[in-house]
Length: 364
Ligand code: AMP
Ligand code: MG
Image (cartoon, rainbow, N blue to C red):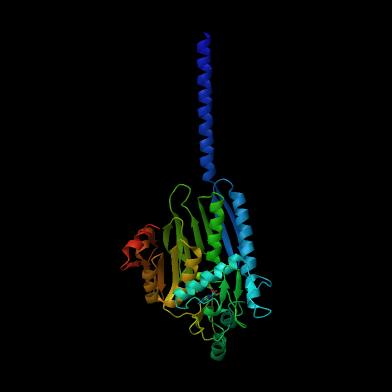
């Protein structure tokens, strides 16, 4: 064999080796991006179940867990020394210095309070405590004591300063961010994961779902929505990409009073009693977890008619409503991505006169 032939053979062998190496690398990488890393933890009084795909998934999950603990420490209403606790226990009438997380979250919650005509009110805490929803020692309060405590309820009096990161709350007022905390936490975790280059994740925060991207194979996530009459069953499945899916339901926390009636944990700030709007479950789908969380609680209080009005005005979320008489209603933007479960049939709520804005949400 001449020298030239030898060189040709060596070059061919090298090319084959290189190609094989590249194929191996690509298939390893593909396998890795398809690999799920999971973490379950109990925090904020609920179960978190996190699933992240791709390189560095384990480290990303550890960081998520740290972030959850950090937010729990700031937001806990009972944890002595937390930002929320310090706002509720001021030494004097001075502004309380808080973390940016708490200050911005309060600002968002107040905005949603305005947008929903006070249906979301973070100052309901004294009334919630009277019902025992903060401790689990449930009781039906006297009408007079609810009336007296409502004097201390008015979210408009809470003044955050997002430049100085301080909050001023009048003496005797107490806040609770339970209606928005998990949605905000979902937003923070998605931001953290995005910054680490993660492109595919699904985060279950006590039944509230936050998705990042699509599944690793590009297919949308399938998120089950619970049947509020039989929470072990589902009333349907939503297919979503890069969205928060957040539900407020009477079934999530309630007690049966001595009078045999059920009393749930979502109160109407107008009278201090469990919301009696005709809705038993509200699911909100949108880009921002904190917004979906705040809205799901508020729309539960507002009822179907006002919820539809707000949906048409806002144009940046979709929703699924279940009424106490067993009606299921979904907004137009969910039509192509919601599959009804057995026995359920959904009526479509048209987007109304804002087709331009609404069409952007199609195919969530
Ligand atoms: P969610 O599960 O997000 O609907 O939040 C419900 C929690 O928010 C309750 O357990 C209470 O702690 C609190 N809450 C109840 N009613 C209201 C309301 N109208 N506005 C603000 N927070 C509320
Ligand atoms: Mg909520």
